[in-house]
Image 1 (cartoon, rainbow, N blue to C red):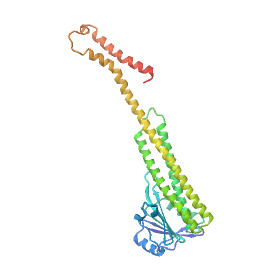
Image 2 (tube, helix red, strand yellow):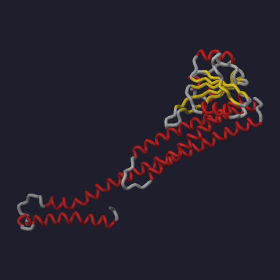
Image 3 (cartoon, rainbow, N blue to C red):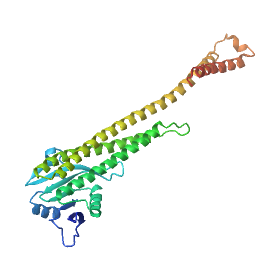
Image 4 (spheres, one colour):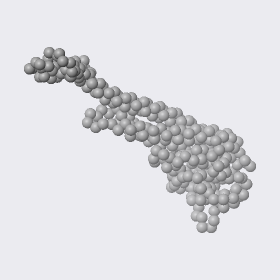
Amino acid sequence: MLQTYTVDQNRLHRDIMDAGPNLDAVWIDLLDPTPQEVGPLGEHLGVTIPDREDMEEIEISSRLYRESGAIFMTAILPADTDGDEPEMAPVTFILCGNQVVTVRYHDPRAFTTFPTQAQRTAMHLPDADTILIGLLEAIIDRLADVLERAGRDIDAVSAAIFRRSDNEPKDFQGVLEKIGRKGDLNSNIRDSLVTLERLASFLGSVAMDREAGTDLRKRVKTLSNDARSLTDHSGFVSQKITFMLDASLGMINIQQNATIKIFSVVAVIFLPPTLIASIYGMNFEHMPELSWVFGYPSAIALMIGAAILPYLYFKHRGWL
């Protein structure tokens, strides 16, 4: 799908596609484009629009480069970030003269919220550079929201782990699953921030080459600093997740040790009675107590006493 945007009175307006796409628009957004959409646009701009395989190249040189006077920048962005399993895919930003082209095969939320906000409020969008910076700022803001939500969820998991509950057993399997999902989410967001930080650094040099204004260069620098600070915050969240994982495993070990201790105490308590019963269960002919009238009740009493004494001792030492 190809969608174009133009600027009128500092507001971003979505073009009506009845008369065909406006290839001279200041922002051209390609969502899961077809060859019929990519071909004419590439010929009009005089550049090669990268396909999905080109965008998924790992090498930095394949993500940030110049071609025929156009600037190509690719970053890994998440979509469907309301859950813990976002869709991670590359998005390419192309600066070609006074036009910006975005190529994507998924739908990050910033591509919906930014045009809506830019249409409602006058955001001072005089050119393609400003639109690109505004879009990247919206992406950074969204990633910050996702990290904040992940941090709150981890705090909730921490409360569930350390909250004392004598009546209700803790579901540590569910806790470990939550921690694992938050760890994957944080890892994905961190990977995205790393690509955005590299993109912002490359964009800073591009802004100097294009002789952008001081205000725009400051926004690019702020964008880079924001990406770096969010990367640091992601590292902090990762440390919390690791601590929660270690704490969960520690609590599981405590529960297992408590269960094993009960079995050990029960085994020790019943060991002396078992010994007494074993002695009098032997089939020797000459055993004086076998002919004693009070032999049986005395043996029962002796076994009960042999079981009670270890219990009282464990209770006195605080082992129970």
